[in-house]
Picture 1 (cartoon, protein in one colour):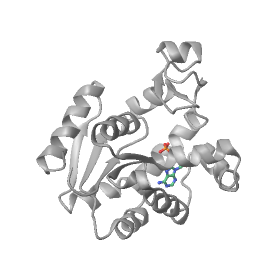
Picture 2 (tube, helix red, strand yellow; picture 1 turned 90 degrees about the horizontal axis):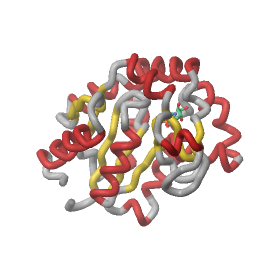
Picture 3 (cartoon, rainbow, N blue to C red; picture 1 turned 120 degrees about the horizontal axis):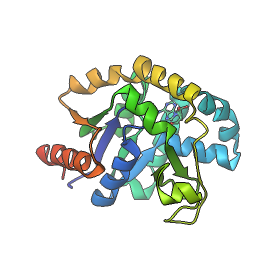
Amino acid sequence: MAGPTYVVLLGKQGAGKGTQSELLCARHGLVHLSTGDILRAAVKAGSDLGREVSRILEAGELVSDDLVNRLVEERLGAPDAAAGAVFDGYPRTRGQAEALDRILAPVAVGLCVLVELPDALVVERLSGRRVCEGCGTIYSVADPSAQTGVCARCGGRVVQRADDTPEAIGARLSAYERDTRPLVDFYDARGLLERVDGDRPVEAVQASIEAALAARGLA
Ligand code: AMP
């Protein structure tokens, strides 16, 4: 890829953004910038930031635009982000999308992928999702690592996320409809949006995203 490349993955929780981000980053040398991962790490570390946001995360509500914008700007300033980034779970509001434009200028977002999944499947996937506390690898409840509670990749503890409960899932879906759905139009109006069907095997979703990158000369 020539110059830094910035890809936004939009979609409901559980649509597969995290998995697809990892694949994209491994293939193109980009940084996986998940604001959810950064915030969860802060909660786990018990930092000031973690204490400030833990209740909001558990309830499935959104933390303030100012706070996440600062985290993103800071992360993008690190040397390993020079080739670009895949944004996963950010931007989530119009204010964040506008802030991202300012942060990236003079470069711009090159592609926004909307990973689509119906609500019923979101609930099913999130209820069965398990995650490694150590390396962040995502497992489904039937995977051996989820069954044993020990991550096959790093030996870390495999747990259910505190916000993958029915109440928090409902709150997150509402926040998505209210705050994040408008971003589909925001990126579509600029000709940057690519819709992919998330209800397919990981490899098929990945192939669609790679094709969209190639079509824009980004791969
Ligand atoms: P995620 O891992 O993307 O599902 O994010 C988990 C939680 O972190 C969300 O439910 C929010 O509470 C918070 N969060 C993550 N990213 C953002 C963001 N861009 N803006 C506001 N809150 C966020």
